[in-house]
Length: 275
Image (cartoon, rainbow, N blue to C red; front, side, top):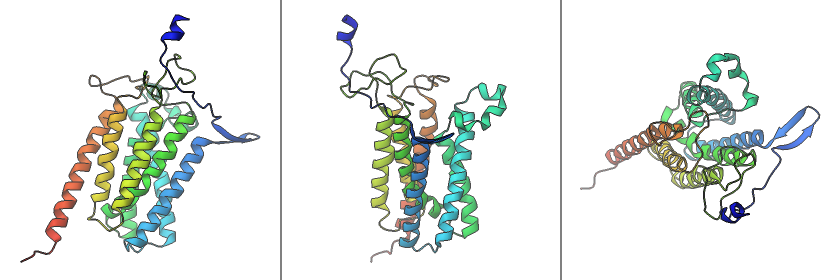
């Protein structure tokens, strides 16, 4: 009774079935739907910007770009998870790398996979690489939004303990309220970044500017949320109090700043001089 009275106030976790519908052996999961919807929204945004910025891509080109993105995200995300978060389990049993149905994806790995796909697409379409990066960056936060909501539904990647009134008691934990860090990330990495980049994309910016803003904002938001997100059990904290997510996000902040400054300098040099 005393323990119950001392427990911080919390709000109820909406225990949603991760499976939307089960048809015999085939199950449709919210997580899978999140990927599908995220790619559809990103593809539509990519198509819209190709027309607005007069890039000269056909609808078939857009579909090809989406296909490349899907492969880059899935392959890069899986390899990234194995390298950054997998630990020794995968080295002792390499066949587990292929067991994608058991979970395990890294956004930072997906980011690298997307960049590789972008290099290949730039050569195929004969479009500047940074311009493709700008276009892809605007739609990418849609995937973060739906993906983090799916993490919330799956009862995974929850936050650290908190006494804040919106803390939630997640099933399978120690019964103490925790930060709903998945919702923090869905809001910041998804809605906020998407809104800002859509505003910036109203006009054609210098190559690399939008991409730089994306990298900068994602790096800052992810680094900040990691302070209230439970560290990965197999890794804990590294480099003192910091997590692997923060170690991987810090370089993104620097990359973002570099691309933004570079683009602004290029725009200033290209501007007509008033006499």
